Amino acid sequence: MPDTKPVQTEKRPVGRPSDVDGKRVQVYLDAESLKTAARLGNGNVSEGIRKALKQAGE
Image (tube, rainbow, N blue to C red; front, top):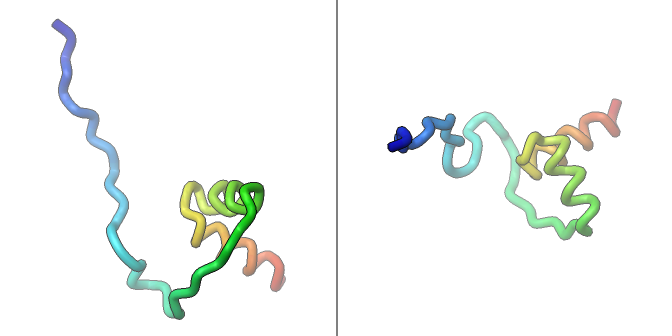
């Protein structure tokens, strides 16, 4: 019988990141922009948006 132990994966924290100072906002993104933001943020759309805005300001 194969070993069926669950694989331990690193859990992501739940809730708003404590190190981000800001205000919660809602944005509407088309499908392509959503995929791009998720890719830039390694699966985290909010992080991808922050990275894109930082790059745009440089």
